[in-house]
Image 1 (cartoon, rainbow, N blue to C red):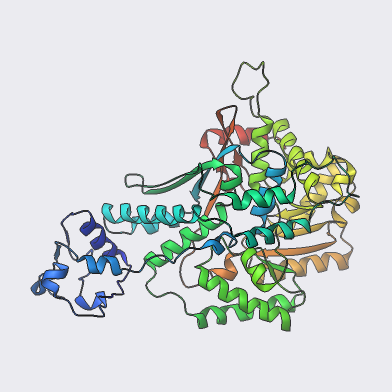
Image 2 (image 1 turned 120 degrees about the vertical axis):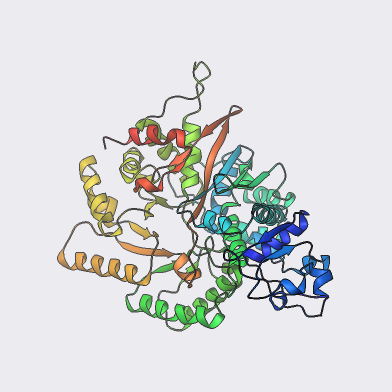
Length: 533
């Protein structure tokens, strides 16, 4: 028997109740009746016996249904999440691999770290809460845990690991780059480790639904070498899982392509240099790959410059270089290192200070530029003011290899803010802004991108000083999840780092206070560090 069982709330509840042997009632008006045609069976069944719903009770006049059992045939034929394969390991953002290699090269591969999901606007928790019973929500959490666990158990194919290593080689620092000599581990050693074992070795993944708090928690921990690769794929899998669970009428290919076309024309019209950053919150993998293919075709016909992607698998398929920057977590990891207590210290971790934040950013940038030729650095990890306090303390030869990425705050005043900070720090605006590249990536749309382009061009024409050499744009959700359905504003961030067998909790401030992510016990202490800037 085959069936296309609708994965809506009432169906999930029925399945969960049946699996747990829990009998219950669906009573109008909260729940609508379940009709036999809703099961869309490809073969006929005896509804009274197989589904356990007395036929006489299924009617618009009497929608109360007692669920006794659902046949194993229906349970086993319920649509499952797509099969994950080794190629899904490349279905990830490029900066996960660059950070992984930097951590490996500096000897941090086996440091134990932990990550935590944050549902910033409650959309994910609302989707879970919308399921009609505790049993259904528990079943959904268990199913999601299974998907994430299946991903973590995948192993890299040698050819895919070789592709990553080959692309990394292209962006390594050259012999002529200044700074300390790079660490000893080679790309060949990195590639060997990448294929040596499944990522889930020594990794713990915990997915749970708290009915009282109406909150889904996703936590995982393990060696940094493995867990650093999970953030983006886990977010993408979570969004895809819940869209499959709650969306009964997914957007058609025709709809997706129709919404994409005017965006590409708008970017072409304003000569915007755009990179597709849409892996993490895409509607699903199919829609992302469809959109990527259309972008590739447009790039070869009318887009100049072409639109490349941060997705490594799609870059491999499209034969284009993967694009990426350096994520918040790299700086957050170095904050934990900066708080490592001295051997004679009487306290577990030194008090958090502004200087600690500054030192950690400086160390992170120095370590990165030991490995790579340049960096697009997020300036908002602990606010843009703190970033430039660290930047000022770097050698000029390192400063010249750093470009800036704006991921929070007001894009239209970003350059002016930097110019003001540079002036107060006694740094030359021409050297440290006019000769720099800037990437904007904060919830961008074609209209916002074109407005930024227009403002920058106006500033250039008017002779304004706060203008960078060039700008680019990282566009994510607007490319890959611009549908009629609400998007999920979720993030997964580094939560703690094991320092001398103790958990050192970390955080991200950003240039918008509401975007604080991290252990709540650190919020006030962190904000106090930057209060007087």
